[in-house]
Length: 198
Image (cartoon, rainbow, N blue to C red; front, side, top):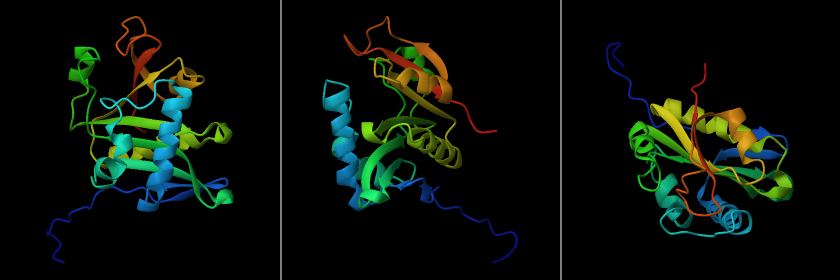
């Protein structure tokens, strides 16, 4: 190759890595059913409202949403002591938050295309307190930086046990929307941005 020939980098990747008895890495086709199971169980059993079509299209089609787009990512944690069962998920995509239901200024601050929105950070209850969520969020942040996103944004329902202290450690709060009722009764939304590394 001639020294002045530009080198075109491929899409960013996350190499699978070992975390205790788990392997964390990008979802493969054979992981999709397990990942969908983790997501749906969380929506129904923990959030209590189940699948909402306007909010959860990616849960029904993780292949089209994440695996088919090189700027999107679906990470899974597989429990190697249980035949590689998927026990946790973390995903990001290039769609910023929508207005409504979110405040207009949030949608303007985190526009689609330049914002990596972090979603589906779910760990099955019996696999919590193993550092999986933190490890997966750090991996997703690194992916977002390599993919050229300007910011990493997320929102969460802080009524879910452990959500608020976890995100206060991992991210910077940008809007406490608990009093706005933006997602309806029983959903206490807080918006965060994950600062870049370094």
